Figure 1: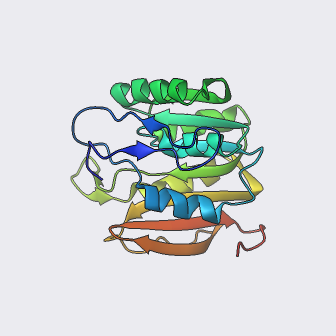
Figure 2: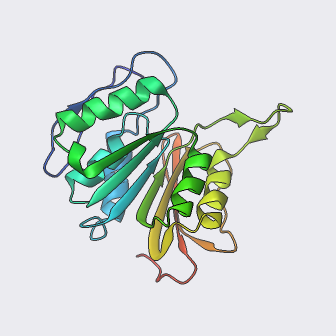
Length: 203
């Protein structure tokens, strides 16, 4: 999604509020169509939930969750300009009192949250579609994120993990600890939904 596209909160207490996007390239806000699809899937799980929004960008996903009744959302973002934008958007939507904004690397922050014994009901991750390691080899940050969430023990038995990834990438597979509940494609975006192995299957 290109910068300049209007991003509105779709539903809830902040419905219709237009969110800011940071200037420049490299930010890919989740489209309204995909957001609505994701929150339709999460219907009934949002009220009173604790949400972790990784690679938060503009904060649109976590803000949407708060607008729909989540108790708290933790936003994790490494870009200073995106962090400023998230804080501005929280002020615009009057949701700052329910939010924690953390600047830093997603994997380091996940480990830190684990050490703090934090638990989340809903995790939403929208990592960059392309990344390379030090040897120039392409990495799947989506797969690495799933492993980090499990290793850090921040999920509850009935948690839901939503991962957005490129529609060109092979489908994300279940892990030893997370089952793939659903995989859907919306244009160039794929959405994979995971739950801990002991959780009941979402319909």
